[in-house]
Image (cartoon, rainbow, N blue to C red; front, side, top):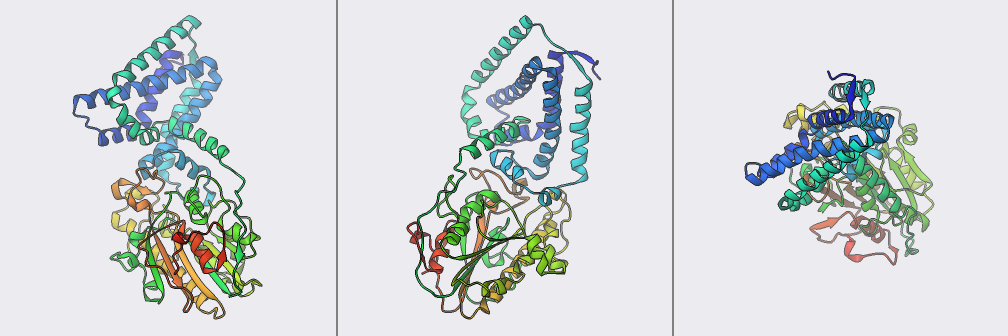
Length: 506
């Protein structure tokens, strides 16, 4: 153990070294897997990255401590604590801590975040976070004189500049992989990307851009139930050719159709926004429920999830509200979304009705807790939050059971709609994004779209229509933006923003 009195230069080098050893194995694993490290150029790049990582971090720590020892200690303790948690998630779920992942973290809720708790996480926090923090708090650093500070700073910047230009031939590769490299460099992955997230959030138009007024064209009673899935990937639906029968009920129901579809993003907030908007945009346009509600359509939002854009309607019903209608175990699962659904539609005094059910059925890592025991069709299942510890079969079985449960929920929606004889009715199911289940050593979702695997963006888009209502176009491929325009078409609502090319109905 170093002495309690330590020159600042020695201390920051030690902290940079510990930061390097504890938290950067994923960073260099990525470099080794994506660059020819056996070539001379590869040796130069990797050696340079190691030296740069050590010198740059030490230099930043040196500057902070030179400004204020107390601020420096506070930030270093914070870095080590957050680093320990961040590297746990990187190692366990192969996540990249980019801006979109920061958005996921900042928009999560307690129920979801608590599902990631594990003994392994506590060990990471203690050994990589708390123990180094105790040393940081106790050590006494001796600041350099002003002349030495300027000399060291100048020489360090010069050295960094020379090293950067020595790697000019590798700039293109670094730029191409900057998102991955930046998302694995601690603590700058979450520090920089958290700042970027809030800057971009501030720049976005937080007040919805209102759409032109719509017109209801007829008095025909019509209802659409839009079911927004969570982390459902199309390749595990037997409707899409999956070898296991995960759609035993939907496969037997007439008028059920499915389209190939890709999500706009690999995380919930962006995926749901895309489903509800008329166009894929960074701006915040008036979303479907708000738009139809403002134009005299009965709109109900029922949810066991989170992450949707602001919903401005009277009938927004969370799990806690819906639980009052169900007394048994159904209230703990997504079936609670169906409580009194048919009765609520019949009670409407309006001819046009949109019901949105925002589910959470296939969200990991605790897939086996997302469905009642009676739906555990495939066994054995993965019960650990550390998905890498489960066999591929166990993980797939647990996930596939969530799809079987989804199949059941969708079939129940259709049963309810079939009983509404006065209504023309439709059910549309589309997922917010897909899910990785160990392919390429990736788990769950959130990888940036620029290099996301297909498992995270190929999603189900399933439609049912009542007899004598609407037929579907023979589209082979659709997008999440098709939802907005298809709902307008089915309810026979005219709008200047309506796009026939994004409508699935004839």
